[in-house]
Length: 164
Image (cartoon, rainbow, N blue to C red; front, top):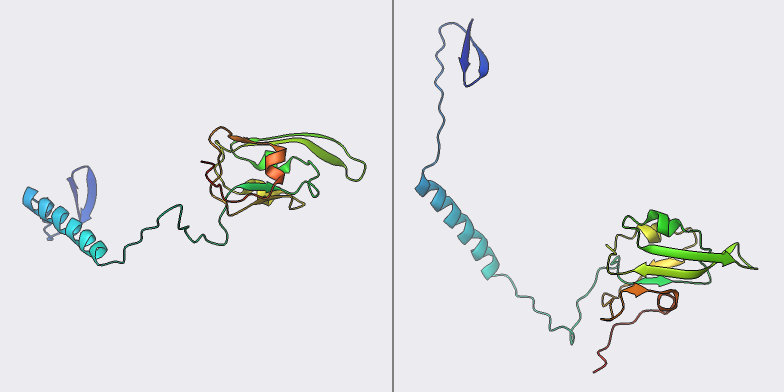
C-alpha cells in the first residue's frame, strides 16, 4: 500500500488504484441562479398564504395559555423569602422584609425593574408559595414608570387604556 499526501491529508491507497480528486466549484452564474431560484421559491410560498393583519389596539392577538406577561404579587401569600430575587438571572428584583406576627416575614419593599426584565419566568418558578405570578397582560409600561413597586404589583393588571 502506498501513502498519498495531498492537501495535508494522509490517505492510504491500495497498490494499483488510481485516485482522481474531483473538486467542483460552482461558477458565478450557478451561484446566481441558485440564489435567485431560492428567493423566488420562498416568495412564491408566501404569496399564496392567508395574510394576517391585526388592527391593534382595536383588535387583540390571541395569546398562548402559558404566555409570560406582567408580574402580579399576592401579598397575602408572600413570605419575603427572596428566592425570586436569587433566581432572577438579570438581578432586577429588590426586596426588603420585616417580621410579621402571622408569618415569618413580610415584604415592605418589593420592586421589579421591568425595563431590564427578560420575562423568563424563573422568579415565578422559584416562589415556594406561589405568591409571584405572571399574567397575560403585555402592555406593561406606563411611559414614565419602569420600576414596578409593591403597590403596583399587588393590583391585578388590566390592559392599558389610553388616557387621552
